[in-house]
Image 1 (cartoon, one colour):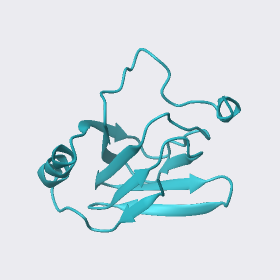
Image 2 (cartoon, one colour; image 1 turned 135 degrees about the vertical axis):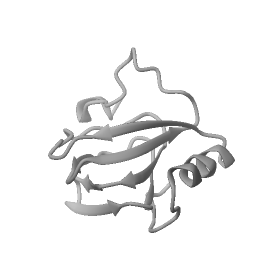
Image 3 (cartoon, one colour; image 1 turned 180 degrees about the horizontal axis):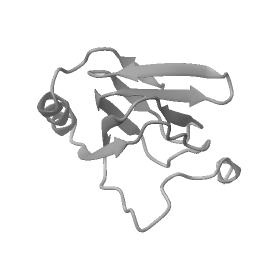
Image 4 (cartoon, one colour; image 1 turned 90 degrees about the vertical axis):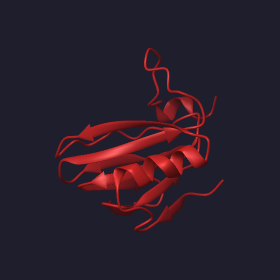
Length: 116
């Protein structure tokens, strides 16, 4: 599966949740504080990202491509895709996955584990 970005897919938080529900996904809301920089990581599942407010950047470390996402934007991050992220402003996002995320296990996996 390829990375997908759709600008201005939704207008409200409810529209984002409805979109995730129509896809049969489990949405969860999170607030990312301004200046939060994620380490390079990957996930074992596809992650659908809805930016409800603020500004978020996703960075592909292999190409140094930066994708800026703003209120109303959507991105599908494929499973096993190395990436990092930056919260430029205080940002509200909805992450949605096929199955509920088990927060008792690590979900941001190290690049060293990608070959396994």
